[in-house]
Length: 136
Image 1 (cartoon, rainbow, N blue to C red):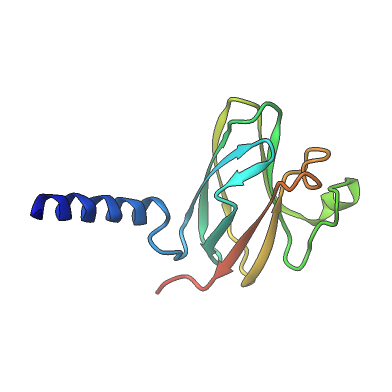
Image 2: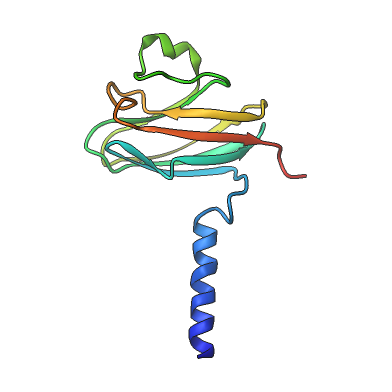
């Protein structure tokens, strides 16, 4: 019985770590893109910090991880008029992975993440990113 409790405790701890430890801010974003979804689709990062983004595209087509500027949300489709409202983006070919970095926005709040590939926003490839005060 003690062994079973120990094993379950270790598994639960590993689950919490893999999920980001309970939803706190992280300077790392690990995301998998498929047709047409981000996994996970919500992220919390500390303001003004260098953020490392590990992106994997398990889909059949090119996908993008596009972070919009504060206060900007895309309607039903991503179009050329939205390009000027991009804060940061990375695109990944099918079956590929990339690791890149960017500086998190200084402005606290909620930001929209979308895939800029035509038709993907309408198909539901949308996520959210929350910028919070960095831990002191």
